[in-house]
Length: 151
Image (cartoon, rainbow, N blue to C red; front, side, top):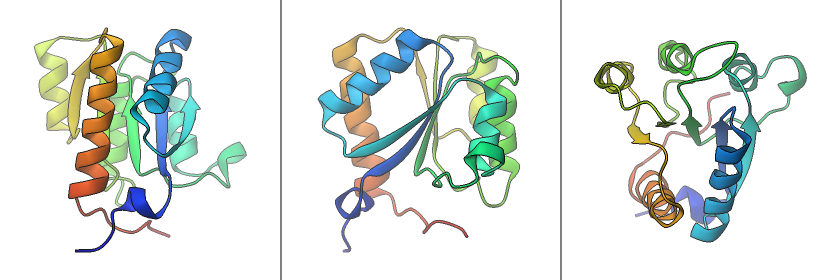
């Protein structure tokens, strides 16, 4: 079996999070979990779509290997961002982990109905978050076979 993506290069992760505190938590958890990554952070849904479609100031943005997506975002709701990602033929192959405060059954069902790969509710204690990050890294970049970046 071939080497994992993580062994070949740092994992490119797009963090879509409007809370500065939650963004810092995610960044620190990546360090503590020792996940070799390049973390790109955008603060709203419109910015996320621009990054993913490589528009405007994101013309040279990398295609992320993983998206960590908050649902409650300004400008464009994370639910709409997820639906747009998963309806786009190029973007739909990128795993999306919903990382949100919403524990609504409707949000959970809608996220999975829109093909989210995982749904994690916040607040999550720091040690648990590190475990989650390590599990994501192990599964998505150690076990799962991801397609090569679409041109």
